[in-house]
Amino acid sequence: TKRIQVAIDGPAAAGKSTIAKKTAELLGYTYVDTGAMYRAITYKAIRLNIDLQDGEKLTKLLHDTTIDLKPSENGQLVFLDNVEVTEEIRSKEVTSSVSAVSAHADLREEMVERQVDMGKNGGIVMDGRDIGTHVLTNAELKVFMSASVEERAKRRYLENQKRGIPSSLEELIEEIALRDKLDSEREASPLTQARDAIYIDTTSLSIEEVSAQIMQLAKERM
Ligand code: C5P
Image: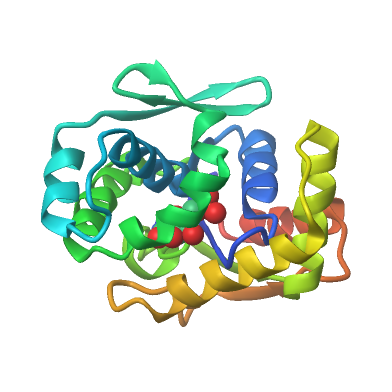
């Protein structure tokens, strides 16, 4: 069997990372969370007080930055310039700023280059917003996952609760809807379904059901 490329895209909190992680595990592939890469550079820019509208500066900053994703028991650890920032990049501040940073075309170009390189040998499951359209453009399997904004907010709410992070459902709905809008309306490779992607509406599906569907699709393509 062939070690294929699997691209998983979709809006915020659609369950992409849960499913991508699980798929990678089941297939024995590498998992790459590209959102974590945009979050990491956003975190660094905030710490250095860099203007998030200044694409040129941010792109220069990225050139001098290493971002490494390392598999661990509970998924993936994120290292920024060799320092672990797995938790830090999930903060509210980073979450509300990341769409501004990821909108810059030059910065995206550099990110995409790194991601293409990570995926070039196959045996990869990558999730994000533009994986099927700009990163793994020849992926054997492309999936576009979504769910209603209420359902996505509810899932994020329960996940936060489990982790002991207080949050409000109303605020989550707003935050998710705003991020979707910014990610979908930006000029540089906006969030959109690739023409050859398979659409899965996960609103009323369990993680197991989605995972089974994707495994079936993957096996047909190996
Ligand atoms: O997937 P996650 O929600 O962690 O992604 C954070 C943000 O990073 C997204 O809202 C989007 O602005 C950006 N992103 C992107 N392209 C990707 C992955 C993430 O623009 N491939």
